[in-house]
Length: 566
Figure: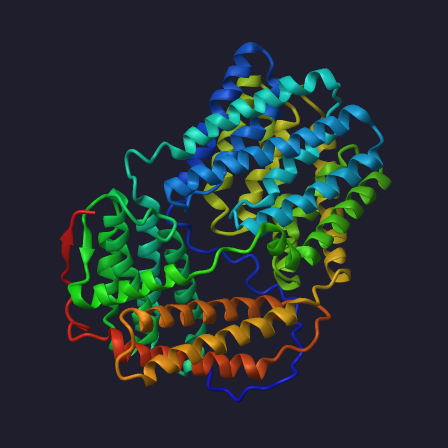
């Protein structure tokens, strides 16, 4: 934790900088999986419609097909449920849009309904933590459908097309399960080990505050791994794999609390061994592992039920209000400029809203740069795509793959492919003037980003400071519980480990909450002194718990591992 003197009452406002906004990151380890899934889900329905001469219906099948973009990091049992809910949510939003389009052609009403749908989709995706691509794809489909002329009699058939494509997307998303049934949980565990190894390797070089980002990233990766593993069954065939991976995540967690006693290369060797479908490495310390996993069981037994959905939606009210206001104003502005597709401006605004204003600013810059570059790419691709509908479909598939392959490097890079793909999709019903499409998309992008960001400035999130206070209190309580157990000569089996894990989770939540609140606008001053002191004392207690209960003689040994079947 930072050793700098804490200050209180500091302003939470950050400068809206351009530094690093367009910097490319390393690609995701599974970048090719969403890309291939997207193509596999979109291609068959589109090619079938092409063969039938009804490519004008592709928008409805794409509504279902694009659900294949979701839940790639979840274990397959959880993925099956998540994909099913995503498909239902997509069809629900599409149904509302189609019914509205069939009842009115008033553009102001359509934009208003689109903005309200966008706000609901944003709030639900954030509350359920559905993960990328979040609400953007849902909003794109529902907003576009609002501006397609409909009759009530056509709606059942169009929804049936979307549902059929959604079922196919579900099949595509679940297809790897028979080949590599434990892939998602193995990847999550490997990421936790690598993140812990990075922090352990950096520890001892430079000031302690220089390592705070690496430590925060490590705890976030460990928490993500626990969430993945705890979604698996506790009994049955998968329980053996789960327990073997839990032992490795425990080692990553221990490394974060006691980096000086950790061999980073050993963690990296374990992470490397988890690639593919080989054996899962043992930690080589079965008694310690068993003791620590008692803590996991104790925590699960004491874990309260998750709060109901309506309670999770409450803190998201400011973000939902931003989305509704920003999308509505962006659509109205586009209408005032006489542009025929105001939903482009609406979707641009909807794509901006992140956890705080600073991240929203970054996304606005990325969106504008990516979309404008994508408009130029469309100018180069359009002559080829206009040679025939088959080439039009193939170009869309190639861009679909490129968008998912590149978006993990940076959002703007993925947008370079998304923009021409969206423009080509509008030509499925008939070719249009390239220059007009380019002009309208460029203007709508700028209008949507500008108006959407201004709405984020106007609608402040004053609850962020309250959540920081609550997170500090939770971290203090978790630390006190661990400290009380440390003071006992012989705490109950697993109790200290459960307290240690609870403290680690509380500190991770505190850092994420503080970072989110610090990027807000016109919020009240944050309790920076309490945050710093809570983190400092919490991490010291974590280290003491590790020395008391988890550090074993094999720590710091070589990197050789013993393997067992999952």
